Image (cartoon, rainbow, N blue to C red):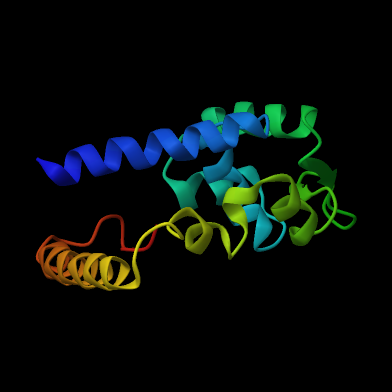
Length: 145
């Protein structure tokens, strides 16, 4: 199916872009919530639906690579926060994929009419899948990921 191939090629392009920056796809998934503000490993784990130990290992690597740091809460020393090292803008400069202009640049060789047709097709697929998504029972009291 075309959608399966598109997904595979898309993920491969993203993985290669991230590898060029010294990152992996799982690291990007963990970094996303931290870019919105400091988080505990438990919060990140719930947000991206990965186990605590998996997220902890990914945070170890992100910390080694200078993307995040762990800090203890000043009021409750049992709490450990994961925070960005530097600003969101600094991370976006290190990882082109996370910049707003990345996708327009990625598809800049396409004709405007091709981009419009692709956008309309993706919107149609999204609407169809959202209807399907709503037909399933809510998981764990939350439907958000």
